[in-house]
Image (tube, rainbow, N blue to C red; front, side):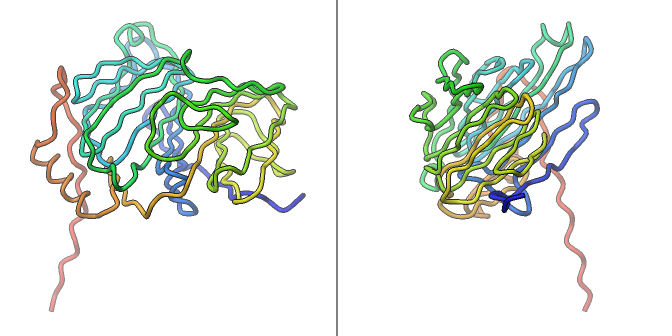
Length: 298
């Protein structure tokens, strides 16, 4: 076996009651890859008729969320008045900036029949100069995203630039995020154009320079060299990365910021009901309780 050209990240798995989530970022070994500070693999799961997901309204600051589905649908509502259903291959790019509130639910029609749910949700930290900008939301159907074809390999460029192509989704930092499907035995070379790069194996298994990477693992590549990626079985993976962040980020609950004060301010705003509401929604997720500091005795 050759020297491993990557750091392997193991998932932290959480069971949400018939619906599991594998969290890869943030991790102890790597808190972020390029501007990506959060990476959740949702499912796969199958809901019986009458069941689905119901993520009540909750706030975000300082980030952009990217939801990408392989199966199922999610209905997105936010405090800008957006109502958008996301389907497999589509992109929902929600910029929180100074603050946004949104909910994520299974659409009524799909809830009635039941069905599959499988996808990835990531958070992208905004550059410091854009952390407090006005919130926004854009949706791009799958047909508008560039496709990249190599022998036995099909790629959909979700956001950013890679392999000589650029996604139409407007972003604020240099990055790439790609959904890839590979036939068994197919391979490609991941260029070294970005200093921070990673590959997450959704299903199947990969061989990266004679090192196996199984499903549910993320390989964070070492900087400065092209990386050969081969599929040892029919595989699905996500490629992500970009330029390093312009400084460390603090993450607490759904908030991302370059200063702790911004996190505290957002906590108070949500606690006091000063975020804008989501039209048509009456529920919300309360601010998590923080452990009380230990009493001191003198």
